[in-house]
Image 1 (cartoon, helix red, strand yellow):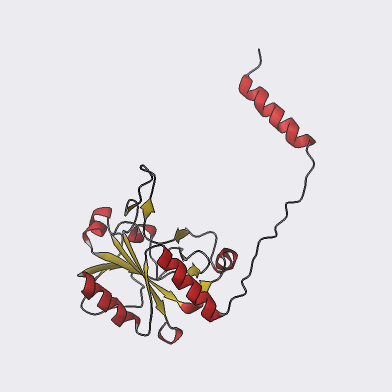
Image 2 (image 1 turned 45 degrees about the horizontal axis):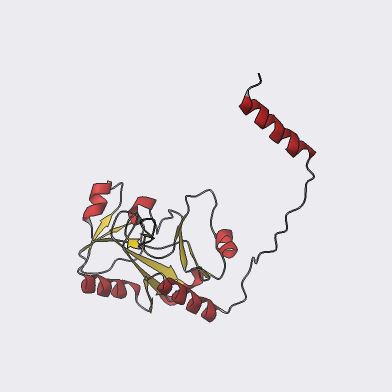
Length: 204
């Protein structure tokens, strides 16, 4: 009696060998048509749909300080190379903080590699302004600074800007799941609160 697994794999291999190769159409859009202003506005609307807070600010550090004061945030974990240093907040540079240490801070402050207007998504690739993935997964609050020039209209445009060899994280709003009885629960596997600061280019 032949091995059932080998027989099945043999049939699959034969079917593949006898099949004709048909080109797969790639007709999806690779470039957007919106103006920079329209693209930014769409990003704002889509991010808000995810229950994230988004604002256009002129002074990034002052705006972050205001958010922290309003929410009672006293400590923020940050990547060591982060250029924004808000006042009146204790900044804890991440040089390998443990999960327990990250859980003790009030939030995390990072930049991003790109943003996608169509889906309201922030793209993180563990760059110098973003830090490692754990930095934005453990703390309950994530404040992310997005430069207007980083906002792309479509996913293919964003992918063209990043190195595919880097660890890539797509963030669309606060962490949430509806797996349990279709009830939305936030903060299960990431920050419960996401705040996006769109920085004008003169302040980036």
